[in-house]
Image (cartoon, rainbow, N blue to C red):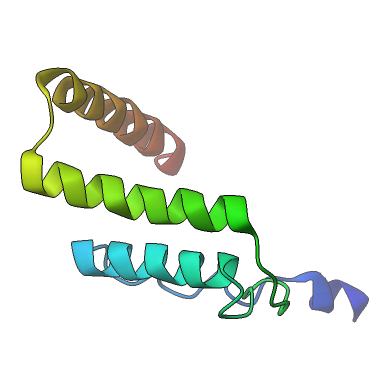
Length: 96
């Protein structure tokens, strides 16, 4: 019975489709947790974590800037290379 309590009940739940909107909401929720405006879903605690709040807000600001002004050529290549490598790693692991 004790082992049953250690199981993750969320492991088989499907994740929502990843859209830009769900991504922005996810970052927003993370910022609200770090600001102490919402409980941490993993612990239930409400605490202000200023460096994490600032980091998440800065990520959202950077996204806004890149959407408005676009990626540089180097940033575009880096993103393509990283996505390729991560997708190949995923295919290799998920295919086993």
